[in-house]
Length: 405
Image (tube, rainbow, N blue to C red; front, side):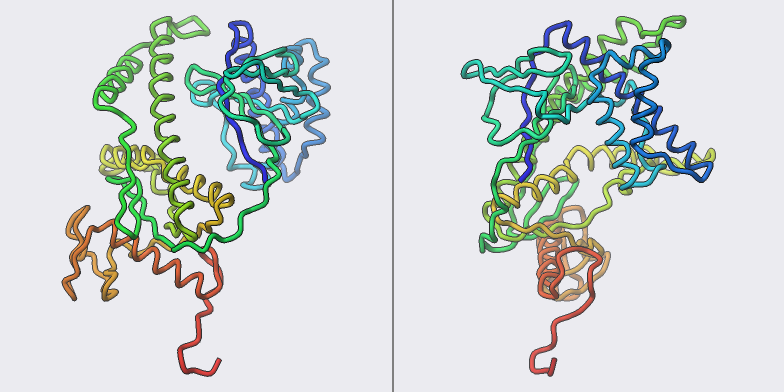
């Protein structure tokens, strides 16, 4: 199976500056190629990767675009391939522009023949990349497979290298362990049907105050007019914010990974809600000058949802489940938090508060998230009993006992 290995890079000042330049060139190629594809679609035509790669090679010979030749050619070609795959999967109008301030630089080396890796000592390894030379990285674990491609990216102020390797392992057979339902929430990141709560505070109270202070300082600082680069104070604030956000992301990623592995090791089936996180975290502002209503409350809810890592947890579950023999299925989330698990009575009044659930028909009481997780598990077992493994599949049902099929 294909898997990933991520390591911390130790770039020199010259290598870090060159990596920023390569990331900027790849970003310019992505934006230009995306605009070209959209312009072709406006005219009712289509342009392929082959044609764009040919035009890119011709542009390198133009003296006004000689800066394109400073980046490794394979990284630029891979950028065009990634764009073509994104357009084929989501359409020409769905892929987004890559912003200089909001998009972290990232580029990929797709040819493993041009990449060599060797271990220097117990802590450090060395990587040979085209036009970069020898780059050192922190050796935290063996690669464990054959390298397929290498991606260099920046997270905050630190650079990382990610290896896509073929580990040679087969997908594990079903482990036969009991199933479990998982409810993802805002107050608690994940609650299981057995009553286990998984949560972690990724931002300390002191860090929250410092984060707000840095954001206020950044909003009050202005770019110096007449210059292509922002002021030194603004650059320092952005660096400090990047370090703080990177630390928060690392904690969230660590929590999500540990939680996912713990669940798939102990259970053979994990049932989760099929949540549309992108729609749920959309802005509360209306279009065409409509300011919307309760915009500040909606923004706070969006931040709370994103801080729990719902999407990352699902990805980790699906990835780790392949190695531990656990299946992960998604079910319709409709009314799972309003339905009584004991008598199936559904009413909005059943959920008295965020944590309290009391059925108005039978009087059943439980933690609201635990009750929802039990309903999610029941929906997942019903889906697997009908022979389905995802939302939106067939609606066939099991024959009733005693009936003739």
